[in-house]
Length: 84
Image 1 (tube, rainbow, N blue to C red):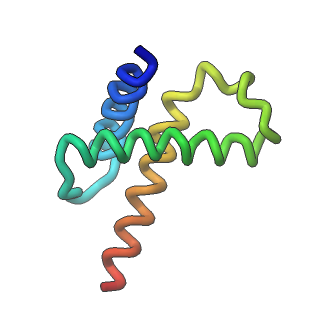
Image 2 (image 1 turned 180 degrees about the vertical axis):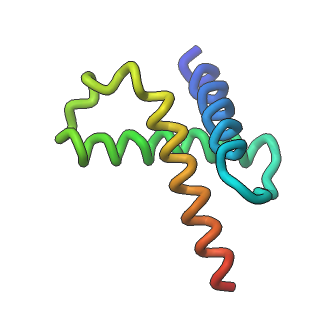
């Protein structure tokens, strides 16, 4: 059940991040889901740096952190693709 929750949570976070990021992102359903899951990891990593690894304090804001992490990954991807 946890894997299904992670996939749905990642898809929603990736979908919202893509909607908030201006421009066109050419990725499908699986790419959006993977973006959201990776954004969750990125958001958790950034939160642990900022708050010193006390992730239990951040539990209510994990969805927002996932979206912000996905936006950061979209921005990094855009910067990498513009250099080509």
